[in-house]
Amino acid sequence: METITLGTSGIRSSRIGLGTWAIGGWMWGGTDEVQAISTIRTALDLGITLIDTAPVYGFGTSESIVGKALSTGSLRQQAIIATKAGLEWSGGRPRRDSRPARLRQELEDSLRRLGTDYIDLYQIHWPDPLVPIEEVAEELHRMHREGKIRAIGVSNFSPLQMETFRRVAPLHTVQPPYNLFERGIDADVLPYAGRTGLTVLAYGALCRGLLSGRITMDTRFEGDDLRRTDPKFADMQLRSRYVRAVHALDALAQQHFGRDVLSLAVRWVLDRGPTVALWGARRPEQLDAIAGALAWNLGAQAMKEIDDILEHELDAPLGPEFMAPPERAAA
Ligand code: NAP
Image (tube, rainbow, N blue to C red; front, side, top):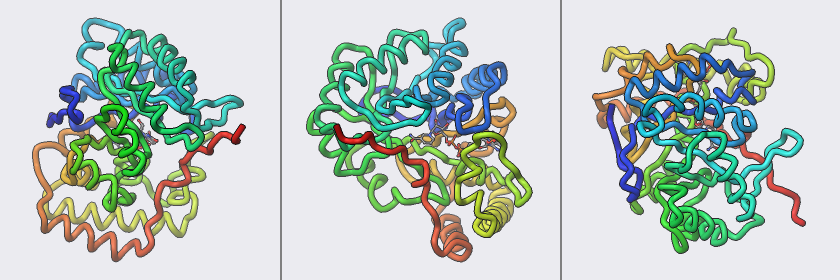
């Protein structure tokens, strides 16, 4: 496993992290706890140390399953638990809420669900425009000084928002969307992280499964699976363009490296900067492919050929904005 230090925290993490949103079930068509626990333990066996979760993933379910998976032997000490705060979900619909009292309550709830007395990396899930960033940063700084959290992160923040945060508290990581098809951060967050020493936890590294190469025009999604409304999957004309791009990327990966598109997609994220690729998996066998993404590099020529394919197949690529949760109504 390749490793990286999370900002200036001193915490050494694997460069592939396990994403556990789907493990929570909500927006992914349900959960299977036995499979989920086995997936988390398999990830640790394979050298993945960072487990990313959040209270909102299954409204507590994902964190509880992570807690159960880490409850035996020394697994808790082996793992870097990265969880989040700042979304409330009354009525089953998430809204942004980073008021300090809520963050404090969320921390206690997360510690209980995870069965631990410290969080390794605590992240603000989405910026809340109704709370000054300085107040949010001050509360996380307090938790850090108390030893309840070992490192501080933000997610879906702009460089300007991070600059404000860093005037008040140390910041170690940022978690934006990033994959071959969703490259918005190339223009701002990624260079900012490089300049300021932040580690980037790239979410959706497989573009919600599209870059696994297993999704075809016939793939159907069940129940509340968010891919039923994700424009890249739901609009069949668009889907056909993305599937064609995946085929072209797969051919390039086979020709140049004897690997498949999934390995190429994860390697691409790892070769772009100080990144950790978050890999969403809910069945142990989905992690078999990890070795294919490690211990090689793409190089400048392949990077250029990838850009050419993307430019040719997708003249107006779509971002992941459809996933952004709404704000609260102002009081
Ligand atoms: P992802 O990693 O791009 O894709 C996950 C999906 O890819 C899986 O659920 C699975 O779909 C498919 N997959 C995984 N391995 C596979 C394999 N070997 N073969 C075929 N398909 C495979 O998407 P994500 O889960 O949304 O993102 C990763 C993590 O980032 C999340 O779990 C979460 O921790 C984090 N995240 C954070 C935010 C934020 O706002 N901070 C937002 C989104 C995600 P099936 O199980 O359906 O086959």
